[in-house]
Amino acid sequence: MRIPHNLVRAASGNFSFRQRVLGDLHAVVGLRRIKRALNTPDTSCARMRATVLASSYAQAYGLLRERPHPATSPGIE
Image 1 (cartoon, rainbow, N blue to C red):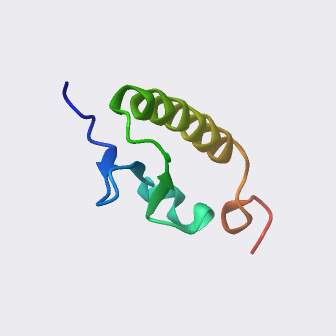
Image 2 (image 1 turned 60 degrees about the horizontal axis):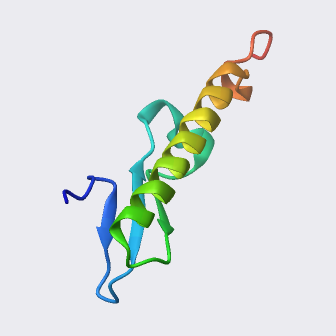
């Protein structure tokens, strides 16, 4: 079975999830890359957990893009 690019297997055998934060959100999120331990050595379980995390982060990024940022809010000079 092929392992997705956002899954990394540690020396312990457990998988971790990694995702790059897009450039326009670096300042808002405060990170360039998100890393989360999935606490499982099972590939299929890690894939499901990674899919849930990726979906959650995509939703959060969408919400962050919708709200005005202090530096770009109209009326602030």
